[in-house]
Every structure is written in C-alpha cells, then in structure tokens.
Length: 347
Image (cartoon, rainbow, N blue to C red; front, side):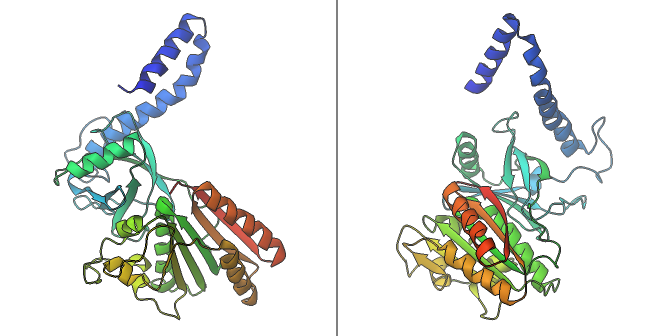
C-alpha cells in the first residue's frame, strides 16, 4: 500500500477520534467515484452488464485485454492502443479530437486512475495513448510494458471526457489554425491535427485554408516515438494514415498544412531516417518565434476577410503564457480575434 494511502487513513481515523466526524462527509463523493470506477466500470467492461454475466457476447464492453497493444518507444514513452471498433462485438469507442480518458491498470494498482489525452483522431482505426514516464505510476507502466512479451494486459478505460474550448467543428467560424506543442504535449495536437486533415481532404471541408503546426522538443526522441512507422530507408510502413505521419513527409507547397519542428538540443544526424525525412522541417538549436508565426497567420486571416482564427497550444507553462500573451496583443493590433485553447504539459 502506498504511503499516501496510509497517511490518508491515519488522518481520517485521528480526525474522527478528535471529534471531526463531519469531515467524513467530504470523503463520501470520493468513495462513490472510487466504487463507480473500480466495481461498476470493471464489471461492465468484463461482463457487459453489472448484475450478471450475459451469455451473449454482443455487449462485452469496448476494451478487450487480448486486443490491447502495449509498447515502449523512444524517449521513455509507453504506447497503449486498441481497436476503435472492438473486433469480436463491433462496439465502438467514441470520442472527439482533443478529449482524454482515465486509465487504470490493475497489474499496477486497482485504486489508481490517471487521465491521459487520446492521441489518435476519431476516424482512425486504432485508439492510442502516448504516455511519458515521468512519475511513479508512469514509470511502473513503462517497466511493465518493457517486460510485456505480448501477453494480454487488462486495462480499464473511463471516458472519453472534456472537449476543446473553441468550436472547431463549425466550418463557418475558423479557416486558419495555429497549433503549438511542446514535448509530450503533442498528444492532443496530434489528435486535432489529424482530425483537421481528415476534415479537409477526406470530407472536403474546403473552408480550412491554413493549418500551421509547430512542435518544440529537447531532442528527437519524442519525434521518433510518433514517427515509429519510418524504416531505415526513410520509407513509411503500411498502415500509416492522415497528415501525421504520411502527408508530413511528402509536403506539397499548395497544401493547407505546414509544419515546423524545433529541436532545442542535439545536432543533425544525416544517417537517421527520421532526420532525413524531416530535414526540411527541422530547426536545431533554436526555439520557435510565436510572435512571427501568429502575426503572419493573423495577417493571412485578415487578408482572407476573416475576423477570427483558432490557436491551440499544449506544453510547458512558459510556452503557453507566451502564446496567450501574443494572441491577446494581436487580437487588438491586427483586429482579428485570436481564440485560444490551451493545456499545460511539461516537456
């Protein structure tokens, strides 16, 4: 049992002994949530019903342990993925771009649920989570994935929850988009970026005129984790889809999508397949200039007769603050409203 659980029980017991029984009222909502996730959700996923196990397999839940894939990637990142449409029952895991879900892995702890952004887009065949080892639970997950030899792994998923704070679905609102990501903060941006690409080129949403994607990383490790479908010859493996990662490697000057990757540490490696493929997008030893990027895109929107544009940023606090401040300034200077959605992630 973890130290914080022991301390929690001690505080509650001592509080009751000293006449603070009323404090237990505050524990009730937490217990209800815990029971809901641990008992109700777990039984639904396993049996398809709470009261008894159905003989039919048509309602077994979305997640099946034998359909879950777990892998370790560059940068101490664990990827958890499973089919969006369950193979044996046809049930669908429904979500929107930019949403998150709570994950529980009983092998690590039955009491711990952690929120992670869904990094795949809603139209993709596989639902993916990219989780960086940066704490006690995530380090255990990375260690567990490292030792996993393909055996089925039980994973409980509660979600999806949340939504992007600006309306990206209405084609009449935005035609110009700026996406900024820092390190593992790429997870929601990847989902939104691929969804926008699908909207533009598969569903023919011609209102999307410009999407500018900027990603800052300390080194190539995180990029390699998301570009794992590139072989030693710099060619893509079968099955890649969407702008991220296929279209990004074969950029068209006439495309609505434009990308830049800023690697603050390290040097170019001309023998690295990813480095070769992204050479025209990579900037080593520098940081992106959000002032220049937002000014250029804002003026573009104004020339096109638009009075607002969408800005999405996910990364460390300093990056988010810079984008927010710049957006507020240009909303007044350029006379185009910069609508910002932001999330905080450390590199």
